Length: 390
Image (cartoon, rainbow, N blue to C red; front, side, top):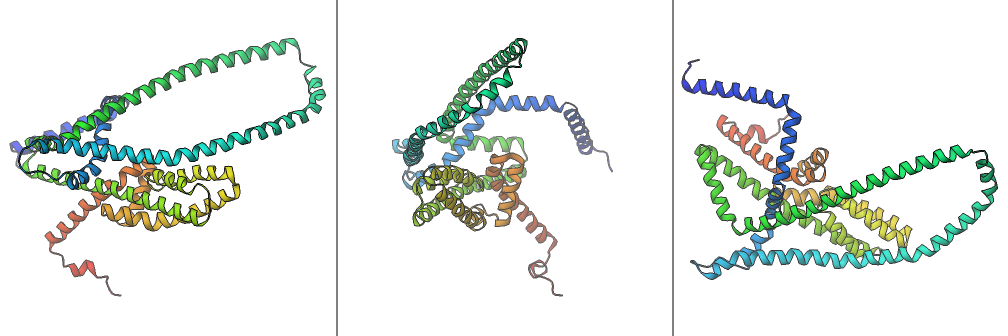
């Protein structure tokens, strides 16, 4: 091999990369703590970016249909983006308010039903307490052998236990209050940051492209921008497909529960539609809440609801979800199920939401790579399209 400046530079880069990787492994806890602290500082901005990405999906459609781009520079052109953002926020808040108006009365009715059953439960408890009176002589005889020192020791331990519980409750209460305040402030800052992103998204995208072309070779920058565009389209399609699938599932439950004459049909349908935004397992959360609400009025109908849920869930999980979401992101049904399973194992609910579009991007990139290699090697399509004959 000829030792020129380019080869020496590549060798030096490999050596420096190996030393850096070894140092990272040697100080892995410190590196993990540093990354965690950095993510904590950047969390409002990361949350704002995620909110902006989600809101941009309906906002883009609203802006395209309700506020078409005017010709030239005018006041209408300047007010187009804020108007689209305002309509998007009103639509999102309206959907959440409508869901609250549907769910709220059902929850209130369930709570009222529970409250109405409390007096009867207290009467039954009082009867059971009265039945324990006959065991009081045996209890008194068992306690008569205890000495005063034993009682003092028990009392002291009880006081110490109560003090430790009280101090733990106060400290945990402070932690909870601090966490709530921090979470609210993070959400507010992230929401405001998302508004800035949505109002200036073209300018930010142009600046991002400038940075890529300034730091990378032109071919690499073109490739990176192509991957980013593919990822953006895939994640947007996934959000649209997930919302469509949730609406389909909620409608199925409303219709099926109405036909079977089960109570709280609209309430449970809306609740399952909201929880179904979490892939695969979200509907089970709605099933648990719905079964609890129905069991208050009629436990046998709750059993029937669980059976109905299992039937509809099989239909939705094996037929509707892979086809609706898979077709929206361009991922075959079998890989949708694999992505949900793998994401849930690695990252829980967030992994389920993230791995489907991620796997779709990787699937599209690998598909293009394979097609490019086949074309480069000039392999006849007949060899891989048709199965070999025995």
